[in-house]
Length: 184
Image (cartoon, rainbow, N blue to C red; front, side, top):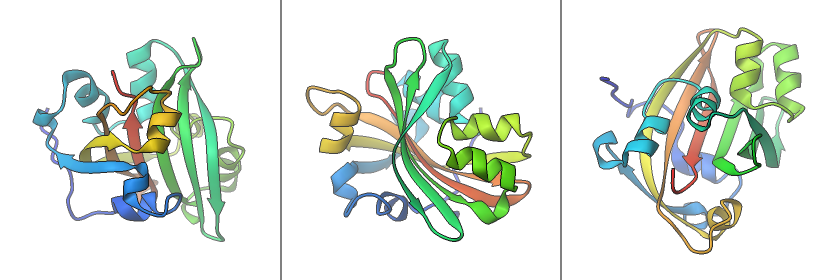
């Protein structure tokens, strides 16, 4: 696959992390990497232009649930810090930060996302929102205390993530930081 991350688009990693953490280091130590520098499974899970919900469910052979850890709401944006967990056993498979420009989505879609009961990708798919997922950067992460805790680790383990942007109906509506659980 030929996929070239866009270096000139948002989201900016620090801006997303600062929505919920005072500093980037509070979440982890991030190093931008090429797909060739990633182990096979994280590369498969992150190096694509598809919804993580679908990719993670296919990889794990299980639907996933969203667990919202924290939210922020402004007149134009809805942001959340989340975990995706396998329905089969409740295991955390992904951590994420999402910032959604709610002015670019219909009222029904926005309300369902803000209900915090369904993963974002599933909502967009079920509402047939025309979407284009654009991979921006791939990251190797040495997790900080919070990531160690949410992933249920005994000690820090290297993990991998990506920043991406989702265009909905042609408009840049969703900024994402997605980190897959270590051992994937």
